[in-house]
Picture (cartoon, helix red, strand yellow):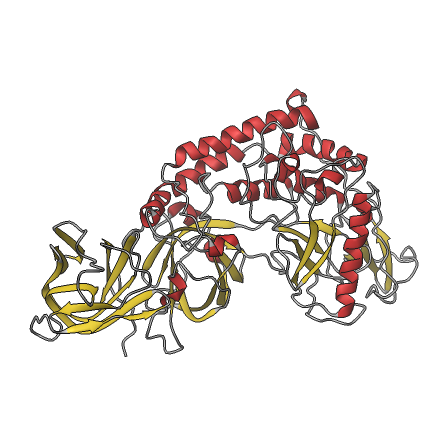
Length: 624
């Protein structure tokens, strides 16, 4: 059987009337050499998608319900419309019928029944499809998903508006066409694979509300082998984020991530704009994003297996998320609030484990004890907090979330990690999903104006050491790292403006899942950009009055020395994993070599860190 990698023609059609359920749909026309009103072919219906394959078609044909009246996909269209994929392939719509002037072989029809809106019918004819709708200004990621490993029949469940599960589609392939995008080529990006030689892929829907509430869905990608996609870090793991709800010119994540890199958080995901085609259907403007992973070039900490029971390993590395939703792989406790703090919402502290995905009893005990101690310390306004949490990263993370007025911060998509060993702390990082950025006020703090449970941050904001570090870091960052953000936003918007228009053409008027929302309109992107820049300008004016007026400085401020608070000791049921450490390295003239607590070589130990020093045969533990 031929692979269905075929040219297609997209035809927008409006139903004449609605039906309570998906009706039986038929094609009637010349499919065997002579037009006959009695010759009908029923469409296959699966997951809301109608498909029909015929070996031959020519002349007039019509697609409708069995009575040819109830659902008529031609009646509401113009009296005549020509749709072409090439000069030699033309379909004409004449009144109630389609007309195919020339014979076509090996033809597949595919569409969804959308009686309350537009239905996009795809007609495929043997060969490679020219995809309509692409702006031509960005790289294009092509993905084909099949029903089985023979890769002969496309599985259109992947593009159904009602797709809501998170199971992998394993029979898939992809190729990435740089598409002449010069600015990205200058950054080192390259095409990967080709239509003739696609590469293996697994793909699944991801996200929570963004997955079930929009027809344009975000996806997680698992490549068959590691690739450096569009200049991002080499990995198998990426996401293509739809940003279907971002009505700020797709600038929410871009601005947050840009600030995260500028302020020096441990790791912030990279992201590149790309247009996406799935099963020959143009899906619009997406954002290829580095998935959150414990990997050398991402979150560079010791990797910990699921269900590890060795006490020498169970102190790390961990990646967890402060989450919106109750789940099975989660630790929950009542959120503590510092005396005198009255946040608008007090919620549960939900610590969802990301990596590893499954905890042994000792892993669950350790993480529970760690977050219980932090929660108690935060609620007591105790400086013991900074024995568990890295103070500098906590402050830097907060500055980013406050600048962008992100009202969901500290309640959902808020990640923390901890490396293995004695002397380690939890770090706020990486940033992820700034989907409610710019929804907070420009004349107040976001955590006082949120309908989400702003976990911990109101209590941290009354801690003197946090506020002292905040003032220092603010003055340093705003006089050293912030400048250039506006230029980056301007350039970025110029890069994606045409693709944003193409995205709007693709999704305007399209049906949504039950209870869902239409895809945001960013076709006129310049006013959206100006709204972001105006918000930032007003917010910075407010923060200058609260954290310090950096504009009054005559020279850039120095970067603050990192906090040297000793880390809380490991509990007695956890071993450090470090053996044969002697008391002194001063008895040898051998050059020093430094390693972190997990044994990885360190060239420049960070101030306040605990380091293993080796000089010849002598090994000792030192604090920088």
